[in-house]
Image 1 (cartoon, rainbow, N blue to C red):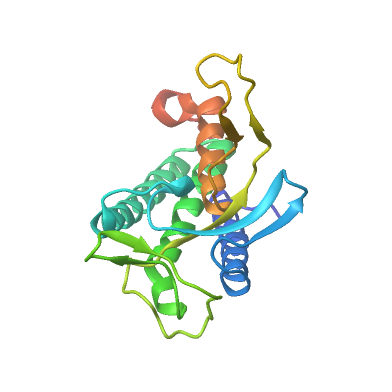
Image 2 (image 1 turned 30 degrees about the vertical axis):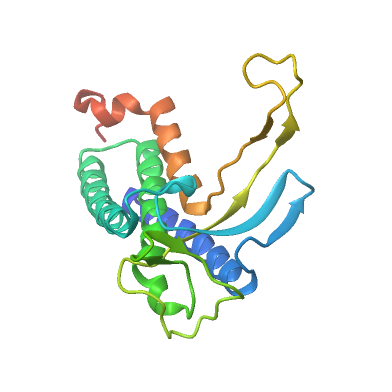
Length: 219
């Protein structure tokens, strides 16, 4: 039996969310902040960190920036979902549905962390308004529904680290000679990679299908 595009979208979103949340909860309940597990030597490492801000460990504007970002993500999920349903009704290509579903799943995955992790776990990174800093914690969190922060004040769990290049540049190298470099330095999660994959895929193969209504495939 052939599935519909709406069913495909739902399957992609649920699959990404299941993988993303399973890994995040496992990491948070089995690893301490800063702890590392080498998966593939020094090239692929699980490095547990909590991110109060944007994707790939970026942060801005303290607690208000975090709340704004969370509300923006909710608005983005709503807009993407509405737009995707509109495109499906007009006969959008399967690839467009796949790309938008990946983006929506990733955004939703990080919203879950921000919205409810503060209620689910007993400890987490919190914002100290007196010193205007995010404060980490010691030990390993427990999933006991005691809570450590309010709605939209939980932090996103990141763990995927790929320091494929970790070296000191030779002294003769222009500008950065003698400096220590790491590539790829940012630490991210499955949700971040889902968003990135969806965006790159749409831009490479379906940008006209997204932005030009005339190219929508009619079935």
